[in-house]
Length: 60
Image 1 (cartoon, one colour):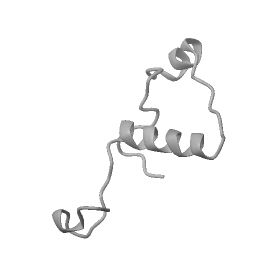
Image 2 (image 1 turned 45 degrees about the horizontal axis):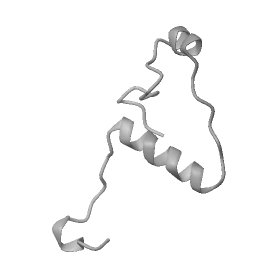
Image 3 (image 1 turned 135 degrees about the horizontal axis):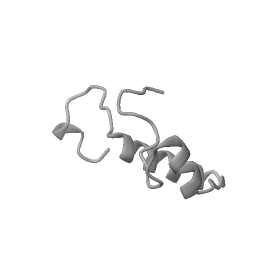
């Protein structure tokens, strides 16, 4: 917000990992707590427990 002239107006897509970190921070601000994925859940879903949790092509 402080350097508007440095960035052209447009839509920017964040990398999935960063998008999930921003979403988690927002939930924390709202007082919501998320549980961490267990290794058993991660193995079943074939995901890394650190994320990202959605494929790169997935759009919300």
